Amino acid sequence: MATTTATITLSSADMMDNSISISNTATLTNQGNDTGMTKTTGLARQTIASSSNLVLLDSGASGGTAAQQAITKGKVYIKNINDRGDGTKYVTVLLQAAEIGRLYGGDWMMMPLTCIDADDITATPETADTVVIEYVMFYEEA
Image 1: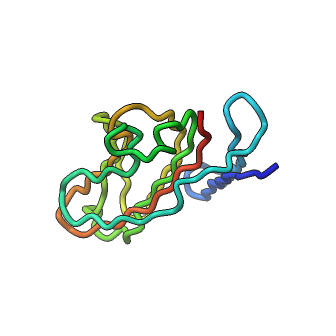
Image 2: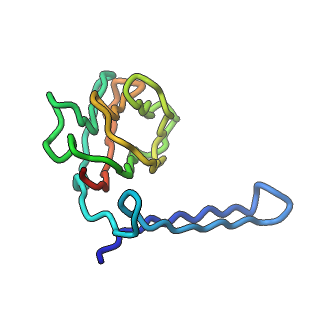
């Protein structure tokens, strides 16, 4: 059985009186069983040079691939690979029209996703500066 895992480690010596360290690993499994997710969109990078929306993942019939249209469960990773700089090179990440957060230079996110019919995930840069986004989705098909 193939397995895909995601690991996160958070540590800080400055947040509390004592240092803190949290580490967790999740095995990305298919819905309702222990079979590991084996499908992926592949790691991609997109350069955004304007303040318009960039569709990262689209399961809609008009824009999504056949595989994306059949996705029942997925995990999405998105990273703004730019330097932090002065804090203006961030992107707003949207799930359909709802803002779910901002990724500043070096920030990343990973979240579960059940595909829906529309532009599922889009990224919009705050400025017209060039921003590079890296993303991948691991998923299972219906």
